[in-house]
Amino acid sequence: MICNGIKKVAAAGLALILAGCSMPPVIEDAREETPGITSMEKEPDLAYEVPESSPNILVNQLGYITGRNKTAFFNSKELPTEFYVINEDTRETVLIGVTEDEIYQEEKGEYFGYGDFSALTKPGTYYLEAPFLGRSYSFQVGDDLYAQVFREACRQYYYNRCGMSLTNEFAGERAHNACHTGNAVLREDISVSLDVMGGWHQDEVGSKDVPMAAKSIGVMLLALELYADSFGDDMGIPESGNGIPDILDEVRYEIEWLLKMQDPATGAVYEGVTVYEQGGGKGPVSYVEPGEIESTKAFAAVLAKFSYLYQNYEKDYAQECLKASDRAWKYVELNKGEETEDPDPWKLAAAAELYRASGLYSCHRYIKDYFRKDRPSEELDEVTFWGYVTYISTKQQVSLGICEEITKEIMQKTEEIVESAKSSMYFVEEGEGNEHNHKLLQNMMYLTMVDYMIANHEYDSVIENHFHYLMGRNPQAVCYIDDVGENNYRQIDETLGIMKQFDADSKFIFMLSKIVNNG
Image (cartoon, rainbow, N blue to C red):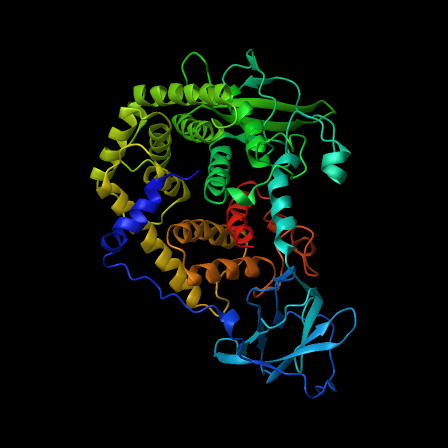
């Protein structure tokens, strides 16, 4: 679905675009040679005390694909020279590996090393064991381990549907009756009530915010454009089997709510719905928050993007969405007095999407003006990234100079990400907590996009290393994904789960769409 603009820029002008931007070398695939693995000609000496599961041997607690690289991290005051791969069912030692690349961590007074066990390709459940370190958490080896995680990440939005009953057939233990079925009142005038039922809950009480919804939808739809083969019509939601990718069906459920948030008279869009729990058994009360220019821009961007992708399945509904986007854009244009001189990511994304979907001249004019201004050199945010990618993807006439500028900026950001990952002992920029995980996921959006443009083995490796990190190969030895791993985030802090975080889950889907597509 992605347009030819990206490929043309990458193929025809990449050398010019990347002038002064050094690309990392393409490394050889480590699967061709797996140093560090020794044969099983002699039985290993396991006569040492093995403590219970320890975080000193770090692995992906879900597991590894049979034909892909497999690396464990070792962290201790002293490191053994060998480690052993044990079949959990038979307790048989199936491989002996050698600890490599010992690094001394001066601040901790400890050594850090790596162990490659890529030669392990037989499906099964295993763990690693080593003198001084004990054993790792268990992990699997198989051909299709990540597809189920991807499926569940996509299904999180179904679980958060508001205004409809979720049945046991589709939601299992998370089934519930329809919620928030009554009208909400305007914050500015409680005598006015509106039907804003539907959409996705974004927090525990059921509040819904338009810009946040637009961000998550934009991320998932871009993933669909890049890696359509990863998204099926069989993810186990009520719409499955209708001939439309389930991710589009799910997004449409949110789009129907977004349409309710637009004032049909002006085109402006309300900010969202805030839900408060009342005391005395009165139940929740919902307020529709006043419309703001930002929510209107976000609405225009996401409705145009959805329309562009949905037109191949239901053209009339796609046209309805495009008209709603156009009304929002016209409202924004009539209310320029509320804007500042600073770069406006949401208006850029809206202009790029509407220009791609309809060829609207005013949108292209805004994009050209945007790139004529002096823009501060600061962190590339995800909405700006959205607008950039859409512009270089359009089939409409574009400015080659702008495409080159966009591509160079994205490439430079990618280089920063790769260099930061390479300089870390964990192959991932170091940090901890939700904010850090969000940053990692956002960085993988940029890297995945560039990898789509110019396939690079090193980029593949960096993306997979981030996935392994989130699945437990991190300093805390915590798996941040639902129902995976012996040391799951739920044992520590419920708020750390990536799938439970509305915006983080969409970025996780983005990264997984590429990994699943790789097979």
